Amino acid sequence: MAMPIVTLVGRTNVGKSTLFNRLVGKKKSITEDVSGVTRDRVVDKVDWLGKKFSLVDTGGLDISNKEIMNQEIKSQVEKALIETNLILFVVDGKEGLSPYDNEIADVIRRYNKPVIIVVNKIDNNKIPDDIYDFYALGFDDLAVISAEQSKGLGDLLDKIIEKINFDSFENIEDETRIAIIGKPNAGKSSLVNLLVNDQRMIVTDIAGTTRDAVDTNWTYNDKNYVLIDTAGLRKRNKVKENVEYYANQRTFDAVDSAEICLFLIDATVGVTEQDTKIAGYAHNNRKAIIIVVNKWDIVEKETNTMKDFEKEIRNSLSFAPYAPIVFVSVLKNQRIDTLLDMIEVVDNNYNTRISTGVLNTILQDAIMLNQPPQDKGKRLKIFYMTQVSTAPPKFMLSVNDRNLMHFSYMRYLENQIRKNYNLIGVPFSFILNERGASK
Image (cartoon, rainbow, N blue to C red):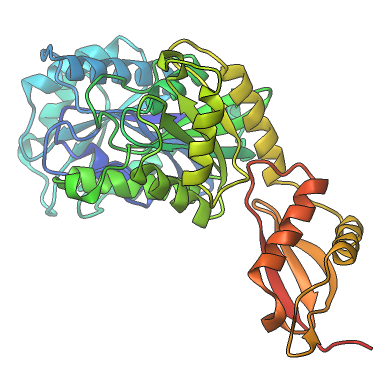
């Protein structure tokens, strides 16, 4: 296990997501004054006094509610309780002890995990007389806070650190973050569940089930990954409520935090304008991209069906010709092994470093085949090329005059590098360093 896991549990609207955002230091869980906003488990890291742990936000529990979505939320919470090392049982200090809190306490006790009762919404300095009623829930440790006003959080974090034996955990920082992006109902959550072999994400036929961007730790061939399931982006005119707006923003944030984007396309729908916007955002932010065409099992096939579909993708996503295309069926577990192999290849490519000597051999051969452009009798000179960074690769060209470099020649140099190095799935860029022309 990479690091200890601390899980927030409680009924709806007690402030779990607000507390989560305060502790991780960013607005990751969606907070709205509406019951049931958080559905999946949302995970991020907390660092307090040099001690790191994973904090998990869960959906609000309503034990007696038998609706399918609520039962799915309950299932997610129960799985979180199995995996966790410490439970933060969040209750509403304004409302006082509720019968629903007693029901949740009965569930928590089954897991025999250490518990801290977190009494939230105590917004003034005076602690109510009935605050100690919460000890009736049967747990010894109690912390009084206001997540909204960031009161008492330091004391709560101290209690968390005291409860965890950090010597039994080994922090693993070397991990690749993979954002699963695409339109609603393309199969993103189902893909995450398949890869981790667990019903980690809530999957229903209801469009927009996933609202937060949800992190899941995953290990494959001894390599550590974080899979980020995202809400499917909707067109702006269909984003009618604040929750949907914030869900869209979380998708962009997830892409920003990732190295690789698995871009899912629904094969029964094809490439849409919204698809191009999602992929374009990943491309513009220099993320590695793998195009995953899902639901290929239910597409009627003819001789050139796959080639025609691939041509459609290339025409629509012409800005990302480097992105490989993998046709899969998540439901039928078809060609998932091909996708796994591609993830490893692209991950390696994203971190590729090419020696300066090899790059300059490629450069000289390219110049011999196709001379650099000139303007008004002055020709572009490229003195040397070197790689200045990885993830994604970035190359520096030393030139006599940056204004003489034409986009088409830069694309030509990119193609020459790609001919010599397998950089499938990876965007890269050039920077120009201008110096005086040498004789």
